[in-house]
Image (cartoon, rainbow, N blue to C red; front, side):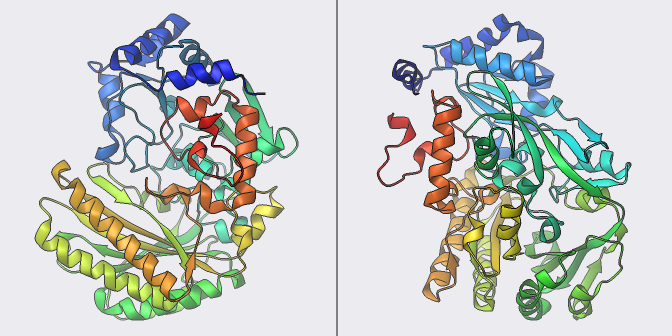
Length: 506
């Protein structure tokens, strides 16, 4: 039951102030956590804030709290909530790879940085690996590659584990094994009252399901037990082509996507790419095959096109392949997403729009900048696999056709050009969305891990899944701690449902 008095107190906390937030750092200290707190003059503070993926997300909080274990997280939540009526808002950071300012950072509050909770422990007796939420995928793979086992995880070594899983998570293994979230056997979660619980298919199965795609609305996930399977070398790398190959590559992409179910060992990301130092736009195919077969049949056409500039494909382990996707944190970044039907007209239009943006930015941009857009196939098995793994809330099981996951991606140097680059990125997405709708090739799904601040991924999951998430939030967070005190991320309280008041109106 929702305790109205408690909710009213939390609602009052929204009138936050810097002085009160500093008080919240003192509350953590009084809770016995002083040795895990750093302040603006401390080197640890500067290092952690400076390590966010996008410079635009490097927002300085009043203090950074780095827990060592789940008990520290629990103690911190209890202290921050008990500090009422002072405004103890906080952010939670896993890898810090979200480009939205404030998604995992905060100015008037405490930054709960999970970066020291980064271990990976393999359990041979039940075939799982416990991965703490502060780990990045590169460290996970480095541990498991040495043991000859693997998990379904992220494709860039610097992406955090916690954030990727809570948004769904794509993977080189997704066509074979399902999305990353569907390969979680159990979550360890700190709830809004500080209680530490476990959620799996048998115990708290409702919480288990909504954590798979529902973001940070239910608690702080401190660890995940991931299902493992036999690892070993695989084949992959990036093949770069001149712009002249774009038409053939996009056509082949559509054919490949429709046939992905025939050979689920294959994984493909196609990118348009422009770096001013290179002079001309390029096309890149990231080809991965999740067993040790060189130049496998699904990629024969991609490997034969004229205009090839470079080819890094080789037999390698996951550590090596994901290091190739390591992204430096030297830029300000904007990305967002669309989902469309697998239609060549959409890809052709996207490419045309992107070239137009590149030409504009050549004259408008100052300093170093880069422009990309990514296309990824989403076969119907993504939704079907979710059902066999106990369900998630993404709603992909509604769709029985191959889809395309689209991501425009711009990076730049100077803060004074934020409006320019954010505006160009939004124009690119919105123009393509309008075109897809005009030819009946649009799709409502919005991938949370790529979504921009003005998008509504949670609402895109469908009414049934919105109801599930709202019910779980009321059950496991009746005071609305993760709606009121954790402002970053996509908030369930902002998702409307017919016939129900918003969570923040309760």
